[in-house]
Image (cartoon, rainbow, N blue to C red; front, side, top):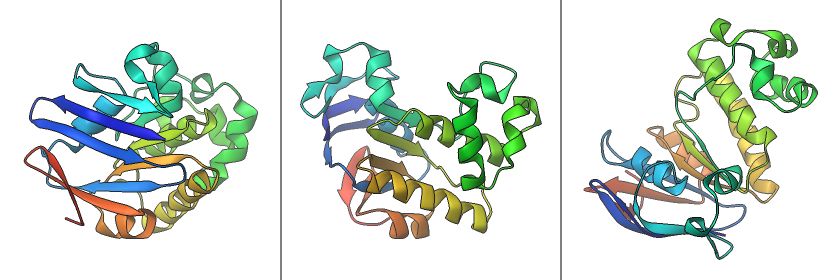
Length: 198
């Protein structure tokens, strides 16, 4: 499905990795080791050497927006470009149906972004990605600001995406999340990936 082909930027790489449909790979490691740099390269958000391919279709041969619709990066603190939450979603009705899945009230569809806590922004950024049905989710610390019950709700939603055939490349400092969700675990150290937990 998704192949990272000698990706390299700054102190990271070259990285080669294959992620199959329905698979979750977790990457752990110290802060500053390059985990987020790797996700941003895979999303084609920053200049880099090497390439990525989705079912053999090279990232370098398609427009960046087309790639990112299929390979979607969710940052720890995602951007919000409009004042109203609903303006960030194509279908407010679909959003309303998803909100309870991550512990948010259905009325949140009518809230301004400014009202949101860090954890609420985090969950809504994930829902924004889910609503667009990408083939691959690139998730950077998706549960870092959440309480235990909400973490379990988010994990259940992610498992559904995997069961539906999407793939997840996950960066986390939470070994328990990696243990519960990932099929394979890697540690990033000195700019390289090494199979096994941190």
